[in-house]
Amino acid sequence: MIRIPKLSRKNWIIFIFSLLVIGYLIFLSPLNKSDRTWYKDLEEALVAVPFETKALYDVPESVIFDRAVILGEGKRDSIIRFFYSKNDEFYFVIDASLMEMGFFYYFSVEPIMINQNQGYIGRSVENEDIKIIWVDDGVSYSIENIGSDISEEEMLQIAASIK
Image (tube, rainbow, N blue to C red; front, side, top):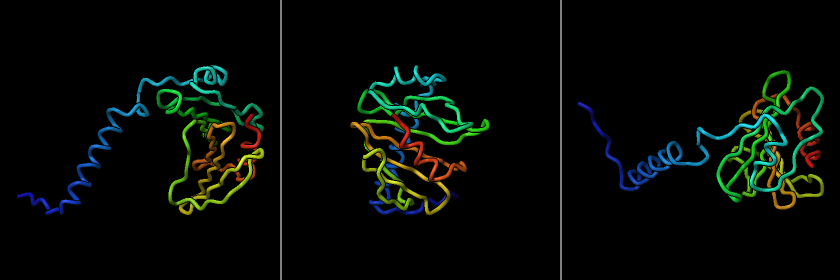
C-alpha cells in the first residue's frame, strides 16, 4: 500500500503551483520552442533579431563565432544568444536583450565599468563560473564562461570590444 504524506494547505499550493510552472515551461513557453532558428552567420543573426544590438567582431585569437539563436518572441521579450568556441569546444556565450539581466543567488557581485557604462561582474561561489552584465544604449548585455577556462581578464576585454 502506498502512503501519501499529509501536506499542509500551503505545501499543497506550492506543489500545484510548481507543477503548473513546470508544465508551462515544458509545453507552452516560447523560450522552449524546438523550431527555433539557429544562425551560423553573425550578420544574418543580427538582421533577424527584433531590436538593434551590438556584436563582437574583434574576437580573440583562435576564438570563432560558432552560432546564434533568438529566444522568445517580440521586441521586448527576445534574447539573442551568441555562442563562441575555441579549439572546437564551447568557450563563452554573449546575450543581448531589452530585458533586464541578473545573477543567480550564488554569485558574489561587484560593480565595474564597461565602455563608460555601469556594469557588474559576478563570480560563482560554487564553481568557476563568471558573468559580466552591463547596459549600453538601452540593451542589456552579458558574457558568461559557463565552465570554460576563459580568464576574467579576457572576458572583460571581450565585453569592452562589443561594438
